Every structure is written in C-alpha cells, then in structure tokens.
Image 1 (tube, rainbow, N blue to C red):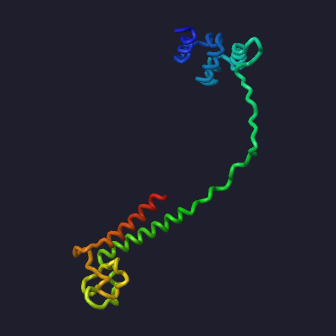
Image 2 (cartoon, rainbow, N blue to C red):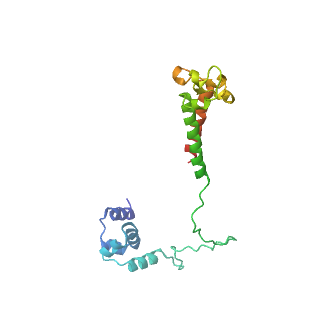
Image 3 (cartoon, rainbow, N blue to C red):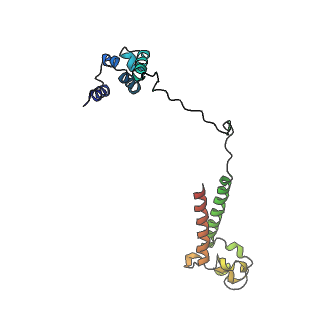
Length: 184
C-alpha cells in the first residue's frame, strides 16, 4: 500500500494523532468532513489553520485556486415566480366516488333483495297467474314493463330459480362498487 492509502486507512480507523493531521492538511480536511468540526477541535486543531494549509497545498504556482470553479450565470427568459400559497383545488372525482358508491350499493342491494322476493310489494296490481300472490315474488328484469301481469314475475331464488338478467344486475352493482373503489 502507498503512504497516502495507509494514512487514509489509519484516519478511518481512528488511529491518527493530531501531529499527522497538522502535517497533512488534506487529511485534516477529510477528518473534518468525515467526523465533523468538533473532531478537529477535540484534537486541538483549529479550522482556520487547516483551511489555510489546505489552500496553500492545493494552489499552483500560477496562483489559481483549484477549489474554486467559476460558473457563468444562467441566462433565461423565464421570470422568477412566487410559490403558490393557497391549498390545491380538490378534484371533483371525490364527490363522484361517493355518488358512485351510492349507485353501486343501490344496484347491488336492489338485485339481492329481488332475488329473495323482497320487492314483491311492487306487484300489488298484478292480475292473472304467476303474480306475487301466487308465490312468484322475484321481478323478471327482462320483463320489467309487465309487472301488472304474471309475465313480470318469477319464483324467488330459494325455490331454485335464477336468471341471466338477475346475474347481470348483480354484476353491474359489483362492477360499480369496484370501479368506485379503484377510482379513489
């Protein structure tokens, strides 16, 4: 290993004394950056001496300081602006998600209650065979316009009867709930 590598290893291991740091301002600056300003003060070294020695070590004969780089100013047509102080505007989708939740739950609960015949009170005006008074308490979604006749009613799901329109209504309700949940 080279001498500089050994000194750096000893610095990192905490084995270097203040004499070595006084002799090598680059190691003193590294110690300050690694361990902090208090480290040099506890070892009895002042920051001013180490900075001065470091700048003398790194400067060339031409007087150029290698630690300073002059960066040309950035010219732009963009004018500076103040940061916004008002709170961001809330999007309207938050209100939409609540209404979507209500719509999805309404469709789902209506479909479930229809499966078990809980909407049979809508068939009070039904005449003929197959009405809610005959035990057909589930609305046929495909014949919803014929609630006054037996064509608009079917037996409830407890009697083993379920149709594609019933599954479709339940699916639409579930999709509306999932869609609302994912939009949040």
